[in-house]
Length: 420
Image 1 (cartoon, rainbow, N blue to C red):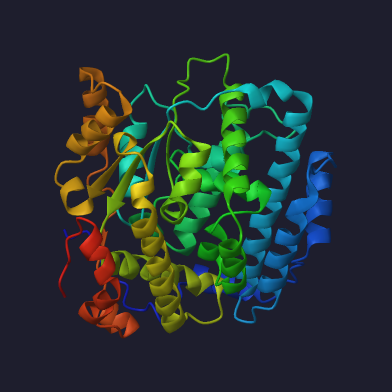
Image 2: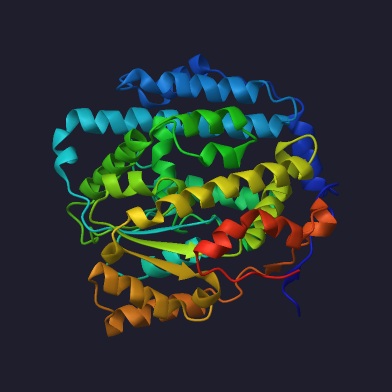
C-alpha cells in the first residue's frame, strides 16, 4: 500500500463533518485580541503580576493590532493566535518569578552547544531529533518548549504524567483530527524535539509569529531590530531549564536548531561563542513548495479562504532574505566551529554527517551513540507517509523559473538543484 499523500483540495478545502462543525463553531466566537485581556488572564491563571522589563509591551501591542486588522482570519484562527499569546504571557510571568526567586539561575553556563541552522524543511528537524537521540546531549521537547515552567501548585497527574505534557498531547490529538496530514509534514507530538525560538516567545520575539499568521508588519519590525536581546533571553531560559533539572541525571550539553539562525548568524555566535554550528543546505524551491503546502493546508481551519498566491509570494521573498543573510554572514563563523551540510548528502548518510558534526564539537561518536542514533533512524522510517507536492498545479508557479531567484545561493553553497 502506498504511503503517498495527495492533497487535492488545497485551495478549495472539502471539509469533513468534524472540520465543518469546528469551522461553524468558530463563527460563533468573539475573540479579544488585545494586550489588556491577555495580560489580565495570564495574571489570573498564575497569581503573578511581575512582568519584568516592560519593553515587551509594544511588541505584544503590534501583534494584537496586526492580527486584529486581518479580516481573513476565521474565528478559530483568531482563537488560536490569542491562545498562543496567552501561553507566552503565562510563561513570561512564570519565568520572571523564577528569576526573581532564584537569581543563581543566571550563573548557569550554557557550554559548547551544538546548533543546527538551515532553511525550514531542509533536514534541520531530522538532524536535530537524530542528535537528540544521543543520551549524552540535552534537547528541548515540544511540551517543555511550550511551557518551560510549571504552573504554581500544579502537581503530576495520577499516572505520573506532567500536566504540561498532557496538554501538549491533547492539542496534538486535536490537531491530527482537524488537519490529519500535518503529521506527514511536521510532526508535533509532545516528545518531538522542538526549536529553541519558542523560548523567545515569552519575550514576544522571533520570526515564529510569521508562521502562525500573515504578519508583514511584524516581519518589518523584527528586521529593524538587533536581535541580540532576544537571543540572550532565549539563552537565559535555557539556563532556567538546565537549573530546573540540576538534581537529575539529564545531560547539560544542549543540541538546538532553528531556521531563523540563518539570518542571525553573527548574533548567534555572539550569544553562544563556543557553539558548534551546522548549516543544512537544500534546494530552496523544494523548501518553498513544502512550506507553502503545509501552511496552505493549515489555513483551511485558520482562515476564511486559503491564500495560495499570497503564501507563495511571501515565503519566496522570506526565503530569499534568509539565504541572502546566510550568504553574507557565513564566513563570520569560525571554520573550526562550523560546517555546511548538503541535504542531498544528509539523507543518504545522516549518521555519517552527525559524526562530522561531532568531530567539530569535540564529541566522540561512541558505539553506544551510534546504536542510539541507528535506533532512532529505524524507528522513524516512513512513519507518517509522504506528501506529494505540486507547486505548479496548486500555486501556479514554474519551479525552474522560481529557481532563478536563488542563483546567488546555488553559487555560494553545495546545493543540489532539483529540476522540475
